[in-house]
Image 1 (cartoon, rainbow, N blue to C red):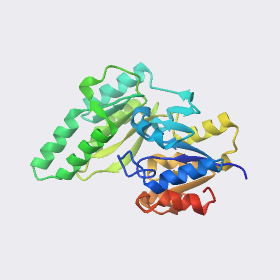
Image 2 (image 1 turned 135 degrees about the vertical axis):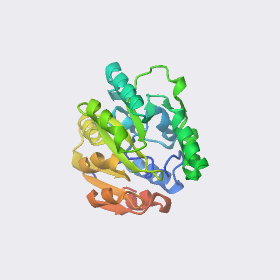
Image 3 (image 1 turned 180 degrees about the vertical axis):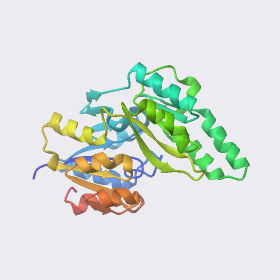
Length: 276
């Protein structure tokens, strides 16, 4: 049997969003698949530092920062942070436009404290306080630091939250030639959140780069994701599977849909495709 190269998104796929502990069934699926000779790779929008707590569960390789950093067998095979000029331009235009930033380096990430101030003000004015609690939990779980601690380390990706579409007009004009704006959606306050990703890479390109490095036909790849930031990965893989808890848009594009992460979806999909 030819072995498969399996790519797993983290948030909403391997774990519940923002968590670092997968269901026991998912850990068992990974262990059994690797024992059967298949290779399993994390493929996440998270930076290396944010995904590293999951490495203890056993993986053959990792794709971090939505394709900007790739390791396999402990060897770095792709590493593409923003240039200093790109980073400075992005940081400046987001700040001028009143857009909240989360800057992702390799080992650490940093966020504008003003975003939580905005959420606190909304909660006090009768808005949704649950959104503030969720944000604080995410920052705690993933070790995201205040922006004041950012010391200029190389940046791979910038997450953003804009109060409205107007706030993104100038950033898209200034940065659109070099970056894609991956819009995740609109939150309960009407704010628009997404990620600024270098056009030099994405998760789909990462699948292709790793296949080329390992000399594996792309037809022998399987990818699991749940949101539109997994789109290129799902499209590039030989078999693209969306989680049952995933976005409606991705479900329409994926080759198939498996049960949600909370219902042992990964294990069931691994089993149905003979990976375990």
